[in-house]
Image (cartoon, rainbow, N blue to C red; front, side):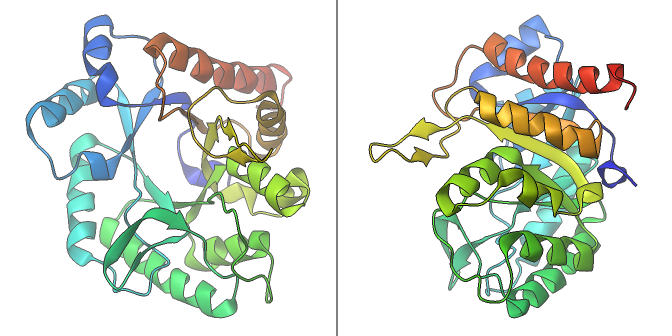
Length: 281
């Protein structure tokens, strides 16, 4: 099995409100759009109307930030039911969220917080993922996050932690290649060795993004610029193992003209086409 059995959509673009009218007017050639489901599923009016118009012409994929899969608060079943209805309404064949926690005592911390790499956490997350998949009734993918600190690696590495969870829960992996690259810089490991150790047959989608240099010489995962050459090189190696897949170039802040986003998605398509041209697709 490759791509977790999901369709390979090629390069995609994040759908943002600022580009609604341009997309509807120009109907640009775009393989697919990813949306932050939490920004749309409980709202009507202008945003909902434009989203459903775009949905008539393009494939839309749901991606969330509020599931809090690693939190100790009980899973929000009402949230899951609303997400399920929303995914059906937009025709999303799968959905995803982040391998992290975002809530403490029912308070949203408004950030993606890293989890300890322990067996106890693995068991906790696996059971919650199974519940999520049972409720949603569509494939569910977990995304690896950028982490500026290591909460605990006493029992296993991050790569082992991710692998244990997706294998035991039988879910997919949304591989954020930029996050792996940045974490390799933050924590001093080889990014490709990290990726090679993951169950790559479970990668159903990929994220790529730009970053912002910090004053101390480090970087911030800011999603406010083009994908850097180092990440494109790592991406090429990834698809040599995964094959064609669905690749989103995340550009969430300091948004450029929509045509610039299409250029980034086209770069992903170019690399996938080159892989296929070499007879490996």
